[in-house]
Image 1: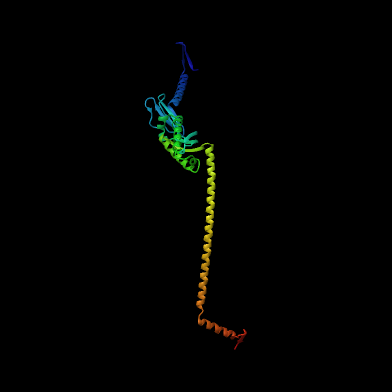
Image 2: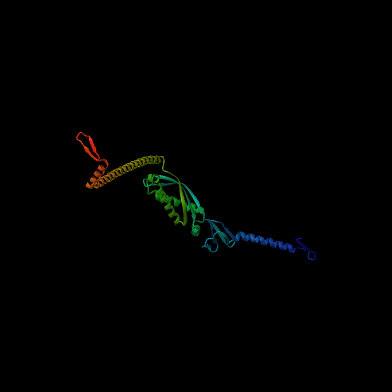
Length: 287
């Protein structure tokens, strides 16, 4: 029983058990209210910014985890620090030679944790960052680059250089707004059918020129190789002739009068005297 009737007073009162139950329920409810109003959880890749009705925006950001706040006085806003992607289409800019260029681009960036307080103070949330900062920053960065190049350079042989300059310009723009630039991808650039056809034809011509130059270089290398080989063969012939001449000279120098007389003596000893008549007959007289 949770109630008790008093016959003397005619009143009904709660029992101790009922009172204890009420106290328990009240305590649990109070804890629940405290949990909802006095504790704030900051998820991963997010920072919290505490704003007090009394002191305004607090200086230090709240990192990942649970944080206490004054119920009904403090309010905690969260700001994601994960990589964000901003897709922009048909960004129209003018080139150095007066042509119009439409660019589609994906830009990746994030809020720097150390600068999150400044970003929140200036823009409150990422939606405002996208609309008030990223879009105009990307537009101005691309304009600052395309204005320095002709359309044929942007879409042709200087494309890589142009991309590098856009990358540099985006980094500078984002840093000026306390944002961290990550990367960008140009998904399409359109200057109109006429310009693109001209660029395609120019590319074909350039390829033909490059091919002709390569063939000329190849022919030159082959000719130089043959020339070097011919010179090497000539040098080898000279060296061989000089070697033979030296050998013959050495052989000639080695034939002396004494050597001749010795060879004659050896021949007489072996074959006897040999006499040649005028008629061509040979008479041998062996002793």
